[in-house]
Image (tube, rainbow, N blue to C red; front, side, top):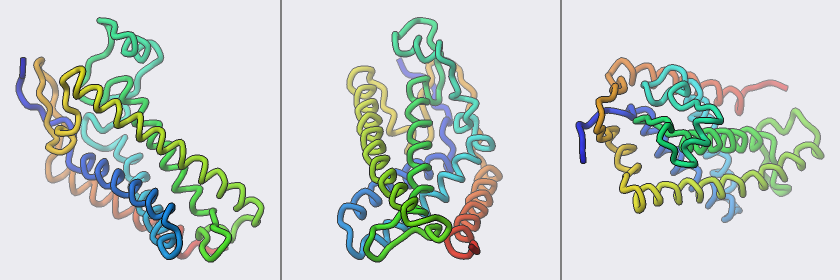
Length: 222
């Protein structure tokens, strides 16, 4: 049974999602290729740090379902969702299990980008904030950067498997709504705001985040 289409994901949220996916994929590839690609790996990390900062802001000022408050669930709600109990929360946005994936990916990728500012490759490249710490501390953070990279890959695999599970077993396509912004709602649901004013707000916020990261990696004095 299908219902009316409801705007769930605003354009800035959708652009963030696919941009982050592309940048994380590029970062993984460039890190493994090495050589001259390491500098591009750093550049990718700076952009990731920028859009993660934007997403944190957007979690408080974005559209209805992009806000953290819309998918911040307690332990009982998560357990009910895992056990598929009738009383489990139903939402057009992220469900309790989906929320765990979102928070885990944001935290791990954000941490990865931040740690990368202090990392080095023991050859010719190092993060812009290495100057603030000792070589030993940079080496430890570099090791953590590598280990956390494995965590991110594991989270991505789980994320993709969950999407496939919903597509095959539950007949619910989670990819198309993240492209179009709209989901079919059998029951009436409140649509997310996605107008020009919201998008201007997102552009201004993204610009501010970009300036902050640019200053951090280029002009922050020791």
